[in-house]
Image (cartoon, rainbow, N blue to C red; front, side, top):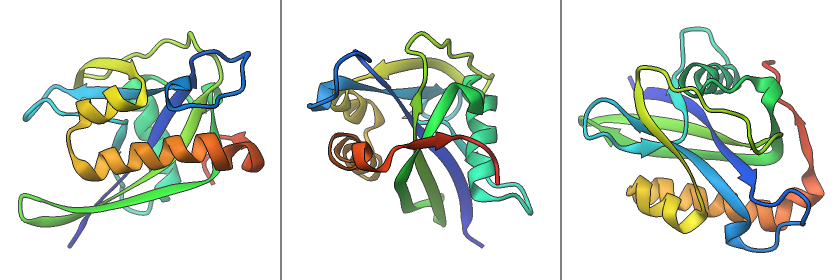
Length: 159
C-alpha cells in the first residue's frame, strides 16, 4: 500500500503593499525535521483513515507550524502531487498553496521539527535539496506571479 501525505506550501509577500512581479517577492516557509537527516520541507503529514486530503494539510500545518487556517488563505487553482519512493515503498504527497495573511504571524514548531526559515525561492530550493520539491516550489512561485492574480484566494476551511 502506498504511503499518502498532504501539506501546504505556505508563502508570504515580502512587501504586501507592492504587487509581486519577480521570484524574490515571496518567501516560502520551510521546517527542518528533528529526525532522520534533518531535511527541510513545507508542513505535511500522513492522512488519517477516513480523513479528506485537504483536512490533513490543514491539520498538519497547525500541528507542525502552529498556523491555524484562519491565518492564511488557500490560493485557488494550485495543487501539486509528488510521487516518489521512501524506503522502497511508493509515497504520494499532495500540496496546496497558501498565503499568510499577516507577514508577522509567528510560527510555533512541534517536537517533529527543530527549526524553520522563511526563504526566497532560490534559497528555499537549495534547502529542500530534492528535485521534486524544488520543482514544486518553482511551480508555486510561477503560479503566484502569473495565475494567482486571476484566481484569487479563499478561506482555508476543511470540507
